[in-house]
Length: 251
Image (cartoon, rainbow, N blue to C red; front, side, top):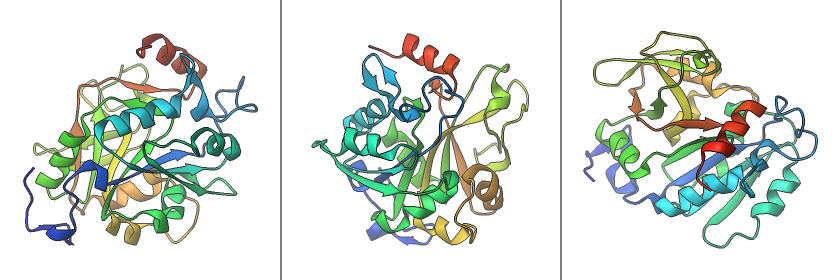
């Protein structure tokens, strides 16, 4: 893995060389209101996929690829999430608790003091895209990126449900558009972000806000890139998509 002398203001000596030295932030505090038949019983991220909670599948994949320090942002029915993962011993699990819904941005901001690495990865806890994180990280470093977002394709009929991003010829992000159809060749936000800690200086003063709507559009001058992959995106935001994940993900 090659490194420039300075990565967006971070001294090269501070840049992690291995994934085990990078913190992962899992956003798992959502209400799951569209999973109406289960939302008042268990958190969305604990929906069962072949007998295993969805969030555990994400953590299994992260640990398999080398990550060892995972911060889970919890809110709604958080005690169930704490109980599920408190005793996991193949990685360090830390919980960032919120008493009231803070949105995706507010959840990241709330966990700021728990993040120990100069760059960190943020994942939506209700979606999965089987990327190679070493390649993703190398892309981020090579492009001296302030923030890198994993992008993938999705059927045009459902694309309006996801954030759409326009890239330059060099894969630099030149436009964010949350939940709209941009055309057959557009790429969607997979909910996987690699950020430098300097991103906290760009966040709104308020405690509750959205990454996708309130922060990302303001970062276009900060050298942000899209990492385009050909992996399928699974999310469990609706009963239909949950069923699709159950049918498709490997048992």
